[in-house]
Image 1: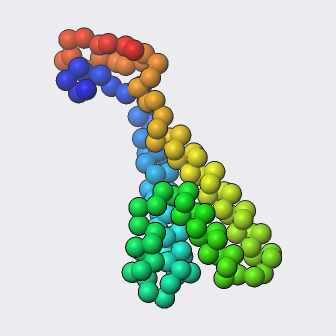
Image 2: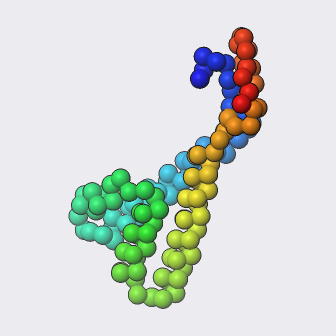
Image 3: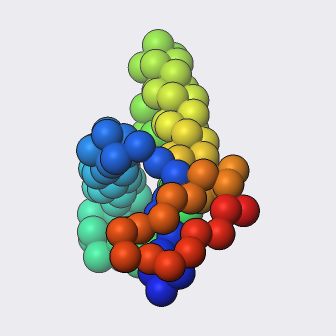
Length: 120
């Protein structure tokens, strides 16, 4: 929509913290993948194939099941359940952030040089 001269209704000061959250979430997902592959198979390539294309929440669920299979200490499993709940919550926050209606609300501003602005 750049031809219409519309800008998103988001404060530019939010770009950095939003970006930081997204990058850190990606790091969390990479760590989750690595630990899942380690638990699943000594052949890391097979484990990568098994986890390929799964949404984050499915990876969390599968990791939790693998962890419970390998770890029998109830206190450690309970702590992992707390971490699982935190990861599920982070996933919900990430989805809200990514799928937010950043241009909603009629707060479009006219770009310099644009002949019109069309609020929603």
